[in-house]
Length: 495
Ligand SMILES: *Cc1c(COP(=O)(O)O)cnc(C)c1O
Image (cartoon, rainbow, N blue to C red; front, side):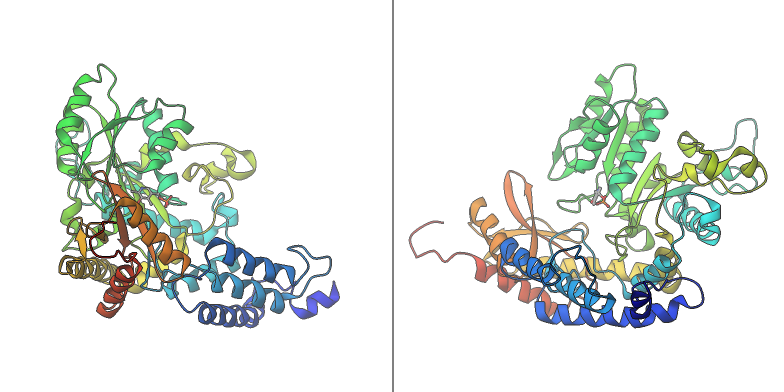
C-alpha cells in the first residue's frame, strides 16, 4: 500500500490536496493524448479492426493482462493506455472525421468534466450533490425556457387574466422544466413512458424516426409503432392525418423528428402540431440533433412549432460540442414529470423531504448519476447564447460549403441542400456496392470517416459536419479523398 501511495496510485482527486495530485497525473494523461494523436496522424488509425485490435492487445499484453498481478503504477498505465486509445481513436476534432453525430468536444467542456469527476457528485440525492443539484435545476429550467419560451400562455382554469402560462410566478409546477438524460435514446424512452402513464399507449412515428423510438416502445411493453411514410426523408402529414383518423377512440402519441439522423431533415412541425391537436393526440419532438438551432435567432424558425410539443428531446453532445453524455428531455410544465416520482427511504425519506431536503429521485430512472450538468453550465456561461448560436451557424455554413463543392463537381451527385449540417452525396453513376466500398476503404486506410444512409432507395455517403472550425481546404481534401477512393473503371465498362 505505501509504495502505491507514494507513486500516486492511491491519491484522491478531491479536497484541497486533490488538485495538486491531479495536476501531475493530468499532465501525464495530456502528454499521452498528444503523443497518441501524433502517432495516429489522421482522423482514425489505418489497418481496420484487425490492425487496431492487434495494437491494443500489444499494449495490454506489455503488462501481462488487463489485470496484472502487480500493477504498473499510474504513470506507466496512463501513458500506455491513454496513448493507445488516442492512437486508435476516430477523432471528431479532425475535419476528416465526419461519419456520425459524434461531435468534437470543446476543451472548455472537457476541463469542466474533469472537475466534475474530481468532485464526483451523484445526482440521486441532495446530500451527495448539494450545489450540483441546484445548478442542474437552474440549467434545466432555463433550457426548457429556450424550448418553450415562445409557447402561448394558457390561462389557468377559473382565472380570467391571471399571470399564468410558462414561468408563472408562484407555481413552479406550471413552468417548463427538463430532465438530464444520457442522450436522445434515454430522452425518447422517457417521452414514451410519460405518454404511456398519461394514457397514450400507441405510438405513431415517421419512417424517418430514430430507431430508439421503436426500442422504447418494445421496452415499455407497447405495441410496435405505426409507421407513417416519410417522403424524401420527411414525415408526410397527409399520411399522418389518415392514420390518426383511423386510430379510433384511443388517441396515440405522435413522434416527429427535428433533424433526422440520416439527412438532418426537419418534419413539418407546425402541421403535425395542428394534426395532433385536432385528433387529441399527444406529440413529442425528437430534436436530439436539431434542438441547438434554438440558440440561433437566424435558424430557430426552422424549428417553429416545437414549442407546442408535449415533450422535446434535445442533445448537447451532437450540435452542442459536449463530451458524451449530455442529453435532455424538456416538458412544458414541470408537473408533467410527476409520473416519475419514486421513494427510497435512504435517498428521499418523506420526513427529509418535508424538512426541506430536495427530492431528486424523480428526476431520472437512474439512481447514481453523473453531474453532466456542470460542463453544460460552464459552456453556456462561457459562450452565452450568442456564442452558441455562432457555433451552430458556422457549422451549418460548413455543411453548405461542402454541399456547394459537391454540387459543382461532376464526379459527384448531391442528394439535397443540407437542411442542417448533414450532406448526402455519392459518386456519379456508382452502384450502391461501390458507395459502401468507398466508405470502407476510407475507414480501413485511416483516411476519413464518412457515414452511410439509405434514402430514396439508394445508398448515399453521409458527411455529418459538426466541426465549426473546418476550413474550406479541409472540405476539398475530404472530397478529393472520396474521389480517389472510387475504384478505377476502365473506359467502356460500367461499375
Ligand atoms: C442521435 C439521435 C438519437 C439518440 O441519441 P443518443 O444521444 O445517441 O442516445 C435520437 N434521435 C435522433 C434524431 C438522433 O439523431
